[in-house]
Every structure is written in C-alpha cells, then in structure tokens.
Length: 148
Image (cartoon, rainbow, N blue to C red; front, top):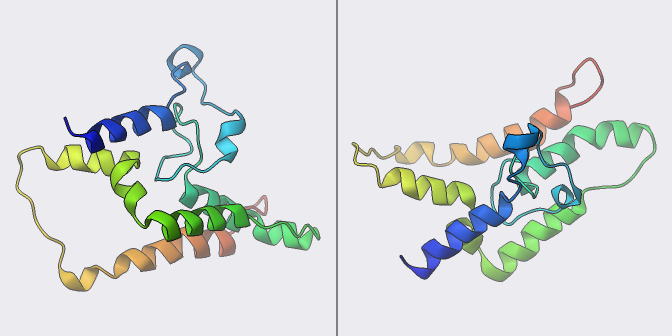
C-alpha cells in the first residue's frame, strides 16, 4: 500500500474518531466540532469529530440574517480563511490526501463496473450547485422558526 493510501486511511479514522456512538447512540458534540477538517466530512455523521468546511459555511449563511437583524455582527470568516489559507498553501492536495469522501470515491472506482464520463457541458454545473446549495438556499430560504 502506498504512503498516500496510508495517509488517507489514517485521516479518515482521525476525522471520524468518535467510535462510542454505537454504544451511546449519540453523535459527537464536543469542542472539536467547531474546528474545520481539511476535506469534506459530514458534520452529522455520528463518528465525525470535526466540521466540514462546506457545512460550516452553510451554517454561517443560515444564521447570517437573524444575526444581522439582532445586531450581532460576527461572521464565520475563520472558515473562509481556513479554506483560503489551505488552498493558497497546498492547493487541492487535501482533496486527494486527507478527504474521506475522496478516499471513498477512489475505493468505489475500483469496483469493476461500467464507467461513464459526464458530458463536458455539465462540468460547470458543479459551481451552480455550490452557489445554490451552500450559499443561496441557506441564506434565502427560511423555515417557520426563521432559520435558513
């Protein structure tokens, strides 16, 4: 097994290190949930010990309007700063080395099955989905309890 594969396995177990959930039936809600991990890692996974950067941005956008209306002017800039610094220093390296979703996708790709390519004109839709589901919907769509 290569060094990269060992690092992927280790990073997956570190970012999903709360293994008491089968016995307790509860997800981890400790202080590490307020720290972003450098990769996509579902916040609501019971074993997740860190926060997904995209999920943190969604939460920030969902609470932006109520916070501004209540004259609380704190912004979740640490998430954007974390992503900006990580991206500036190492680019997309976390996607291939420490992201649990990337690791899972690579394992799924090894399953012998017919593979197909997405047509080129659909490649830009990933940005539409990012803006729509991470920024616009949490900011603009509200529930009865005034939460995004």
